Length: 243
Image 1 (cartoon, rainbow, N blue to C red):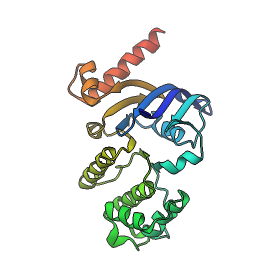
Image 2 (spheres, rainbow, N blue to C red; image 1 turned 60 degrees about the horizontal axis):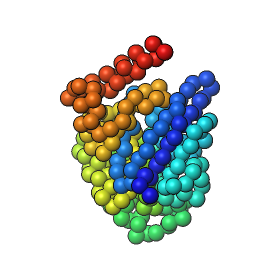
Image 3 (spheres, helix red, strand yellow; image 1 turned 45 degrees about the horizontal axis):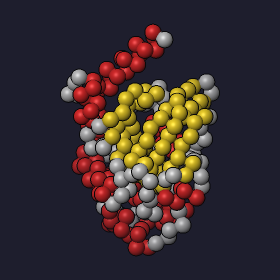
Image 4 (cartoon, rainbow, N blue to C red; image 1 turned 135 degrees about the vertical axis):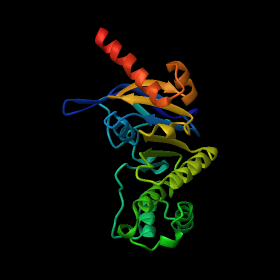
C-alpha cells in the first residue's frame, strides 16, 4: 500500500454551502501533507470526512485501504480537533487514559510515554481547566497519539501555541514520519508549510494546486508561498469568470 489516504471527487454540501467541490487528493504513507487555506476553505470538513465523521454527498474516501466511514479503522487513526475536545474537570492523565480506552489500548506505559513526550509529566495530575492554553494543546496532542495510530489528523494544531512549542510539535511530527506514521495537518500559517512534504492549497472547497513548497513557488513564479497561493487563486477566478 503506497498511499495512506485516497480522496476521489468528493462533494459535501451544508445548507446551500458547497464545502467541498469535487476534491481529489492522495497522501503517501509516512509523509506529512499540509492543507493550507483561509478560514472557510474546507480544511476541517475534509479532515472530518477523512476521519469518517462526515459522509460525502458523492465521491469516495479511503483510509489505509478501507473505504470510509468505517468504525473499526478508527483505532488506527488519531484526530486532534481544532476546538479542544478535553474534559476540563479531569486531569491530564485521566483525559489521555480515556482516549486510550476508547481506542481499546489502555496501556499505562504508553500513557506515561505520551504525556512525557508532550512535556506534561509534572502536570499529569493537574485538572485540564488549570492548564494554560499551550498546555491544553499539548494534552490534546497526547490524546491523539496515545494509541499509536498509523494516520494522524491534526486540525490547526499550533493555534495559540508559542513559537518554541510549535517547533517542538513539528520536530515530533517528523519523528512520527520516520516511524512510518502519516500526518495530515491543516493550517493557514504559511511558514509551517515549509515543514510539509506535500501541500494542498484549498479555497472554497476547491484544490487550487498541489506539490512541494518549492514546486508550488516555482509554478507560481515567486519565492513566497503566500504570493503563490494568491496567484493560484487569481488563476482559478479567471477560469470561473470565463466559464
